[in-house]
Amino acid sequence: MENTQTDIEQSLKLFIVLSRAHRAINDQVNKQITSFGLNPTEFAVLELLYHKGDQPLQQIGGKILLASGSITYVVDKLEQKQLLTRKACEKDRRVTFAQITENGKQLIERIFPAHQERLNEIVGILSEEEKQTVIDLMKKVGYHARDSHE
Image (tube, rainbow, N blue to C red; front, side, top):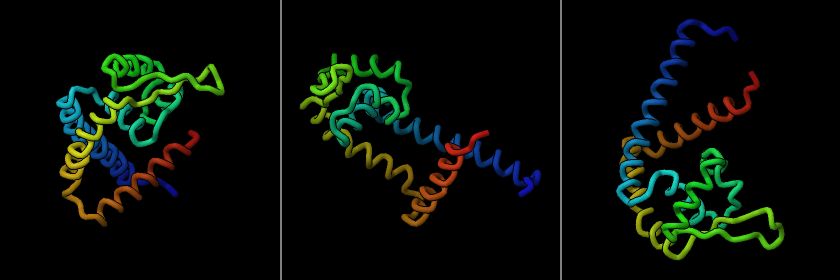
């Protein structure tokens, strides 16, 4: 299928609109997260541990889209705040798990509902059907981008 100039221009426009929407949403969510005394990465790690359980340090970065070199720094900060601990793997001494502490659980349980509500306020302009359409379309584009080998 040949790309027309209009098609190319629409693709560029879509990219710009997506980028601006992503930035606007992130700005709002990050403002709220920092009001809880956490940075967005710390919040993401705690939220992951709370909802998915203990995680190997080596895998956290991939799950929250963070460079692996930054994980140690974030885990150190959360450990200093007594929101998580490191736990050695009993089966493989090379693996260390991050485990949320009781303080971390209490914090997430206190702040996560407000986080969910803020996200709902932001995207609440869309109907349930529109949200599902956006989800389906973004998955389609994301999978295509991931699987492109150019």
